[in-house]
Length: 75
Figure 1 (cartoon, helix red, strand yellow):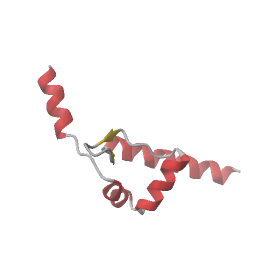
Figure 2 (tube, one colour):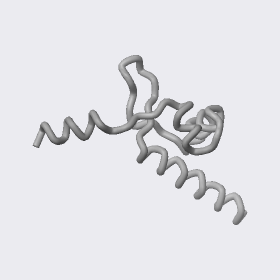
Figure 3 (cartoon, helix red, strand yellow):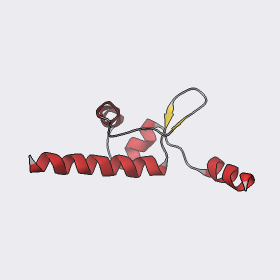
């Protein structure tokens, strides 16, 4: 079982902030703002301590952003 878990972890795609921004159609500065606002969070860091984002992180960022936009519209 450990070998399967390790293989899944190794195969998981990790994105830099620039790559994550491109996938979401926003600028890296927007993601940096989302981090400050608590909308975005990296679940991984690389060996140099840089934030890395998984596909699940990107889905969660988009969900939180949409939720925040909906709250703004109802105010």
